[in-house]
Length: 110
Image (cartoon, rainbow, N blue to C red; front, side):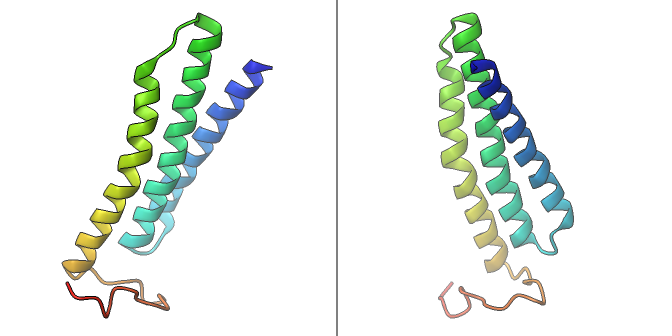
């Protein structure tokens, strides 16, 4: 049963990483590309690392604190860095996609 759970976590993580890569190639502007990169990659890396952690725990009998710290580090830093990069792009004048309906930062002071 645990092998099925580990396999599912690895497959789900790989799916999110692949979908994030396709989103980076497909989306029209830097803001939607950053969304695809940070959200999908965060879930993907967390899934792969969690699957690896469970494999080491149940198959090898090893508790890897490094994998748990890696999961926590990615879950905390990736969304924040994506937000800061998109905020910096907006403040430096990178244009929004022409079909964007609402600019939430337009009236906010820089």
